[in-house]
Amino acid sequence: MNDKVFTKPIKKQFEFDEEVAAVFDDMLERSVPFYKEAQKITEFFALKNLNENGRIYDLGCSTASTLLSIHRKLSNKAELIGLDNSEAMLTRARKKCEAYGADIEVCNADILSYDYKEADVFISNYTLQFIRPLVREELVKKIAVSLKKEGVFIFSEKVISHHPKLNKELIECYYDFKKEQGYSEYEIMQKREALENVLVPYSEEENIKMALNAGFSHCEVLLRWANFATFIAVKE
Ligand SMILES: C[S@@+](CC[C@H](N)C(=O)[O-])C[C@H]1O[C@@H](n2cnc3c(N)ncnc32)[C@H](O)[C@@H]1O
Ligand SMILES: O=C(O)C(=O)C[C@]1(C(=O)O)C=C[C@@H](O)C=C1
Image (cartoon, rainbow, N blue to C red):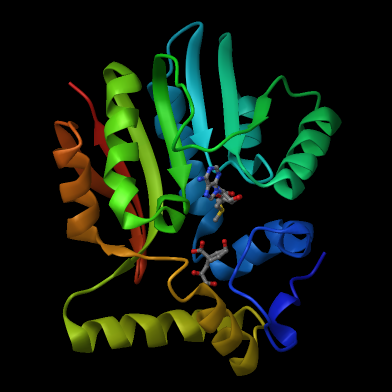
């Protein structure tokens, strides 16, 4: 279904509710530049670092698109677990997994308080930005602790620049992308307002620093387009 959520005046802050979940796959493909490429690169590095009988967690799995793409390429036995706290998203995730006959566990859980088991890979695409900065680093620490030695954390985020002129241009560049995707100026502004104080992006450097502070030995960018980036953090 086509995303028309912001064609009408907004009444509340952005939420992953029924209305958003119903159009979410279209919203992401048209709102995140190179979304499919980010998913492919996530899939590649996730599979490279997954051991036989290993475990992958996807934090903020939404409709399970990423885990389904990993599942399609899986050659060994592994546990794929998606966590999300939006039942509207999870209903769609379960339907998709059933339709593809994919053995993926999707749970309604808060990624901040979940009791993680040891895992080979953690993924969190476009989700940390929705976690309050005060607790975001605590969550990344929890991920680092729960990863096996040599495990990886792959995450994608909207990013900002601390160079004011460049930051303004990055946003302009992004809005041009959205217009090309068929969003009107009105929809873009409405969504911008709804996301205010809900989506709190860090810069590329701040994301890397956060991962290093949380106990990862290395973190770098795998993919970046203007104000969107995919990172990999390695535990040694
Ligand atoms: C932008 S979407 C993620 C997109 C998805 N990872 C993908 O690549 O298709 C963010 C998701 O995080 C979930 N979320 C936000 N805060 C959460 C929390 N504290 N616990 C669990 N899920 C959360 C939302 O419900 C939403 O589905
Ligand atoms: O549309 C925007 O302005 C965005 O920031 C895109 C974005 C994201 O980056 O997570 C915001 C909310 C939705 O979850 C989908 C995509």
